[in-house]
Image (tube, rainbow, N blue to C red; front, side, top):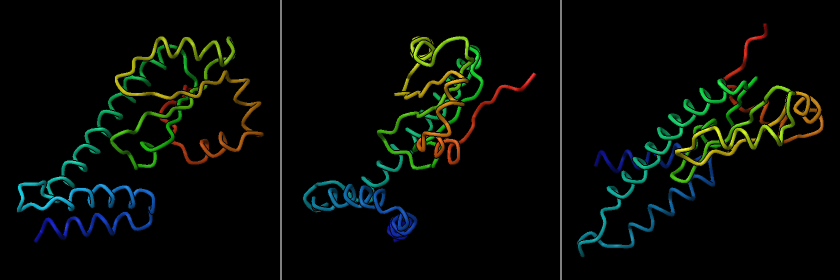
Length: 162
């Protein structure tokens, strides 16, 4: 009975996240179609597997984030901002690492992007939006997506002003 309470509590915790709740519920429903008396999956066990997979993915993303930020610091990044599912705490088994990277204006954002994608290791999928500092300052006032990232994202590294 304790496992069923835990499942109900998990469902309640997703009540304010309709898309995530629907995904979680659909996965749970898939397992309940198979009767446990017929040697099928136990739905509680399947849900535990899904939740464990999500936790493992979140851990892998955090490890990859640490590695990527260390490499970006070495390459001269001025600021690294995390956004997306890891920043909001809504990671799933297919989540990737979403970063905005601001680099010095010594190269264009496009040139920096090529360098960073070659130099930053990726044990998990990493999406980087790369801007030279002057491009970032020019784009920020006119790009609502970047303003949203700046407002809701999590700055994971910022170079100290010297």
